[in-house]
Amino acid sequence: MKQIYNMKFSGSPITILLLLLLINSVYSYWNASIQAVKTDYFTLWAISQQLPAENIYSENWKKSTAQKTYKQALKPTASLEYKLAARNAYRLFKGKFEISATPFLHAVINILSTGNYKTDKTIFTIIACLSLIASLIILAKLLNFSLIHASLFFLLFSSFYPPLLTDISFGNLNQMQLLLLTLYLAFGQSRRARYILLSGFFLGLGIMLKPNTLFIAFVQALLLLLDKDIKNFCYFCLGNIISGIYAIVISVAFFGYMTVWLDFIVNLQNALTNRYHTSWGNLSFTNLIFDSFGINISVLNIIILISAIIILYFFAKKQSAKAPHILNVTTSQQQLDRLFLSVGLGSVIMFLSAGLIWIHYYVLVIPFLMFMLRDMNLSKNNIIKLLIPTIILLLFSSVVEIGISNGTNAKLSWCLIYNFSTFLLLIVIYVNLCQFFKMRNCTAPCRHNSDKTNS
Image (tube, rainbow, N blue to C red):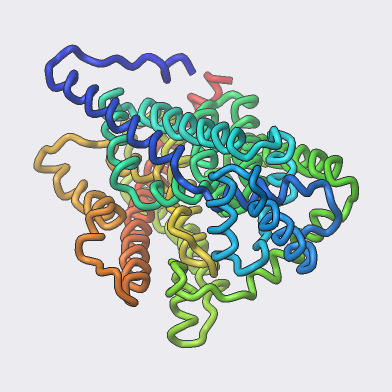
C-alpha cells in the first residue's frame, strides 16, 4: 500500500497554476458542502434521535416521528440549519418520513450522533469530503495516474459532475460508498488472502449500509468463478459474510430485537412496488419503460445482462483458442482490471434494472470512468479508443445542462440522456470484459506458474 502515497508534483509554472486552481476548487467544494441543506442526512439524523424503537418501518411510526421533528423545528431554540432542513423534508416527504435505510445505517448514525444537528452535520460533511479526496487519490494511484491527474479528476467531478453535486446538496452516502468501493479495489488487487478478505469485507460493509452495491459483489463473485479462482472466491465471499454478520449483530444489539432486519426487508419489498415517476427525477430505465408501455422488465434486464457475461466468457475463450499467444500483461494488472469491471458492470446492472435510480447513484461509477481513461496518451491509435469514454463523460457532465430547459420536459431529458450514456457505458464495459477474458485465457499457463511462485 506504500505506492499509494508515492506521488509528487513537478515544479513547473503550469503545475503551480493548477495547484492554485485546485485550492480554489477545494474551497468551493467545501463551501458548497457545508452550506448545503442536506435533506437526506437530516432525515436519517432526525430518525436516529428517536431510536432505538420498535418497527420503525411502520406507517404510524414514520408519521409520528415526522410530526415530532417538525414540532421541534418550530421551537425558538432550534438552529437555522435544523429549521431549513425540516422545512425541506416536510415539503419533500409530505408530512411523513420515507424510511428505507438499513437498520445498520440507522444504528451507525445514532451511535456517531452528538445530539446537536449543526455539529453532526459538520462532522458528516468533513467525513464526506475526506472520503472523496482519499478515494480520488487512491484510485489515481491504482490506475498509474500522477497526483496532477488526480487533481484534474477532482476539478472535473467536484465542479462538473451533477451526480456528485447532487450528493453534496442532499447529503446522501455516496461519497462514503465511493471510499468503501475504493478500499475494495485497493485491497482486492493483492494475491494475499487477508487482503482479499478485507476487500470483501469493505464491499460487504457498503452493502449493509446501503444495498445498491449488491450487484457489484455478485459480478465479482461470478467473474472469480468463471476465472476458476476458487481460493480468492472463497476469501472474497468470507469477507462479505463477516461484514454481514458484523452489521446484523451491531444493529440487533442496538435495536434490541431480532426481527429488525425482517422488518426492513418487508418495508423494502413494499417500497419496490411504489412507482416514482420520471417527472419526479427518477432516472430508472425500467421505470421509463413501465411509464411508457406498462411493462416491468426489471427481472428480464438482470437475466440478459448477467447472461451476457457468460456468453462473452465462452466467446472470448473460443477466440483465444483459435490464436493462442501470451500477452504482456501481469496477473496483478488483470486482477485489478477485473475489480474495476465488477464495479462498472455491477453499477450498470443496477441502473438498468432497479425501479428507482436517483442521479447521485452515478457517483458509484466514478472508479470505472477513471478506469476508461487510464490510457490518456493522445496518439493516433488512442484517439478513437478515448472517443466514446470522452463522450460518456461529457453526457454525464454539467455541459448537457446548456441544452436542457427548466420546463416540464427537463426531467425526461435528463432521464433519456443518462440512460443513453449508461448504454454507451455498458458497451465499453462489455468490450473491456471481452478483452479481459481473452487475456486470462491466453495467459493461463504462465498465470498458474506465477501463482505458484507467489504462494
